[in-house]
Length: 285
Ligand SMILES: [Zn+2]
Image (cartoon, rainbow, N blue to C red; front, side, top):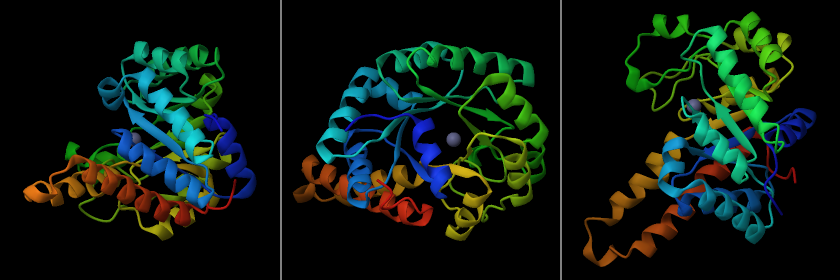
């Protein structure tokens, strides 16, 4: 068992009409939870680390941990770097050390600069066969406090998406279609017409960020429209991590960190299993 590329995993998802969950990890406990859920459900998964998480853990350690957990649980997984902004050196280190997928996010820049940075990432990643995800349009965060009309102004324009994929050669494309990062104040309104149009014009799999709090039926509706990678981070961070720790800290008798770690493994595995079932990726290995 080994680390496999995003391109390979999403090609299978496209053929068999399901989406693959991409789950953030921040430490060994929740990485273990993600891989455990993949193994128990015979599902492909993408384990992803933000640049912040890579800085804390170190890219070499992350790669070895992911490889060894893949062997231990007997399941292939994708190791992905999430939202790499303005840090091409980190992206290069991740590629060199064995990540099988990286996201370059230059979506805050204008079209030309986004293309330029994304192309650099694609060229570098091609040395090892590492997959690359890019972003066009801009996916906001709840913390940005931007009003809906401003958010819509940043939605992905289908024609730009097609041009961007042709100009950069990315393997997957993150699109801004109504989801945001973090928890939603109001239920998100996905722009399904836009997703459909982007899918018609664009040959590569689409990526939906901000999966926490999106209703299950919206996921089910988006998958046949070309959304093959769905990112879930906040739910793991809050319910899979902080809430578990919160339950432990006040009670001295329960303050054993090993007990906390085991709970985190189980809670993260439970959250990932739930998503695997919604995304239709169980029993695909
Ligand atoms: Zn994201």
